Image (cartoon, rainbow, N blue to C red; front, side, top):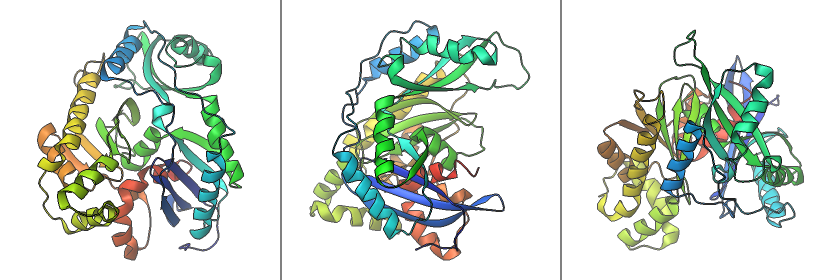
Length: 378
């Protein structure tokens, strides 16, 4: 139920493959104060039609962006805004918000990164009024679909040393299919909500887990069906890689390891995480080893980009539903040699002390929703 009286609030909603999460804040003395939150676990077919790039394709894409020799990428499948999933997801969302007694109708939501184009491009220094034209011309051949079908936004990456002069400028470009934007807009409209902002999970995670820290950080988001890896530098998510391995595979291995019914795995994982019980990593190597390799590959790719040669990530922050599973943290810390820890998205949020035992275990699963709700506060 709501924790405070009626006031203006900010609602963040994360619709993902494992269900829906939401959080609502109010702004108090410039800080976000927890109002209410909730989640529903449901298999949701959000990522259908996405093209899973191979490591070789991702490397080529990054090199092309840096060398200014782009070629067209493969297209993702179309998304039909008349899809019956829209009504189903809208009904689930509406009921969840009702049960959580959310009051705000204004929503910031996230787009699945599997459908979003994300790249850093280098451009000659141009006037601010001409930048959009140059960005569109640069990425036109790199996009997975005709640029007319994409919604493109960009942000200039500030120079590492403020005040220094350079002939070129680096620009972070994000683009999403207009059909995807329409699909998500329809979900929220049919749920009786006003969708004010759509942004990628990367920016939401950076906001909730990194904040004002300008250090180079790797975020590893281990979701239900896939894991996403972002390198954040100067407060911006610069690179993104994705691996189709996640909590669902871990659950199957855990059920086999304990010889229990798969329906019991969720609670058992929470119990061993809360009690800090030691679990051998060997039964889970088919999951944790590819994650470790992907992290190292992401770092290598980032360090080979021009200007990043000395920017070794200072830390690895884990988030997502399976981040609390003990073998993941211990193995990644050992294999990377980099300080690795579970992110705390509640760290910038004001809430009653008595809620901490309830909020800490769900923090990794709520990080995107928290970052979305923080958008209009921080």
